Length: 409
Image (tube, rainbow, N blue to C red; front, side, top):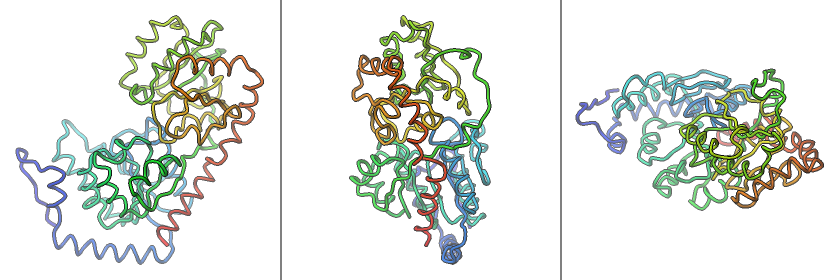
């Protein structure tokens, strides 16, 4: 198969690549490959699956990809994971194809195309049957390129991890919906995303499969940081991206709650572009001495388990694993009732508190209530683990296995 190379001064756009990358030889080869794959799938055997993700580090969506690889491998499928960036913190199963390792020096369109070509060749060489793609999708013509070249001839399942259309449905959502309707399935990680985002766009073959927690987490033995030894603290954790997470609101609400007067700390754990600005904000509050910033921890479970409760103040989410992880460790939660996910996880006053409006005084009052009302707190703590059983590794694994059986049957 011949490939046209463009001089550096005249690099093609993704749209041009989509229209120029095919040849009759390539089409014949793809047809033969499709025949072989269909024959194997029709036999009902375990299949070869490639999970595609930005990385295996940093956040809940990435952790869910790592866990999905373990679920599929446990079901007997041959699992491959392709990461776009060279960041791997989470335990996974299968074979890793790390495209981030090809990123050396300044990146440009030609280098990106070569990475895509490496990836395409990898999929063909390993006779991959199915793609499960978890990437954010914010550029329509890039997605055309994936559809018509990188994933050509392969069954596809796309997973949407955010309720923000701009992050997962490109700048041309209605046109992108037509591409999605060629997928074997389109998975939402929350009921809200499926019913309020996907279906109004006319996207078909949809279903909801929530992200799972891993029961092994509570068995991990690690020490608390010295700063938290014997401390009472409220925890918030995740990537520090103010446009999404709104940690500044949390800092103001904690200050307003005056929990710090009782020597209760606010711990914000994570890294991200807005960390230094938030540290400056915290220093200018009366609670400054009781606001602590910790770095990202890929295994934060001891810190979660020992928190009085965990908070969520994001502007939007998909299915916030912060809440599921915390409840699975027996730790109650206090969250804004945002789009989307918290209302599918939190049972108000049974395993946590849902705050209906983004008002500092309301959130501060909810935090105080979780400290002052011991009966409420103990009730939420007692119910926490059982409340997230529908999101357990085994239950979510069953749903994925059924979906794969349905689309390959």
